[in-house]
Image (cartoon, rainbow, N blue to C red; front, side, top):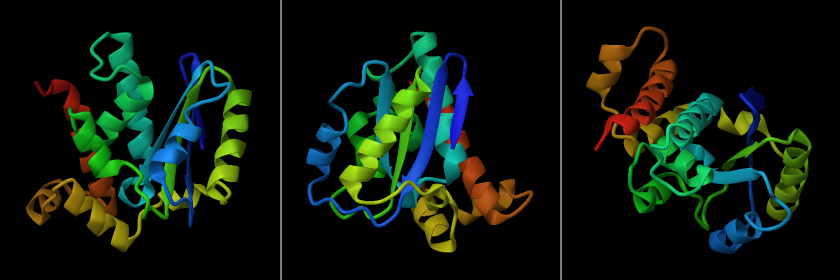
Length: 185
């Protein structure tokens, strides 16, 4: 899914059944190269509460850079902080970062140039051996449970905010936690 925000384009997608033995090598390979005006971040898709989760995390991160209230030095890492609702980089990576056992991966690419995004997507697809699939970001019962555990969402909290489905409430609570990151000291 591609979005346009101010002068930037956001590509949010997922990859199913990714195959890479060393997550660190993968990250380094996909953060180097001819990317002059782009930022790319990868997540464990099993802990991403739909594309909305990453979309709002990117918006909050862009706003933080605009207001010079960012925590991280790079936009990619700032997005990771907001998506994980953590102020510490190490904790953010532990919560949502990709690991060698990750099989479903989410990615966000932010760039001023949509053609650069297309090239980066092809590069990522070649590296992970899988085509981009937006439906990897959709919620399932198993994913909902993992997200509730990772973000410490209790049944009582869900009951107090539920207006639609439980899945919608989980998504809303995760996005709320991301938004609250800016208010934490």
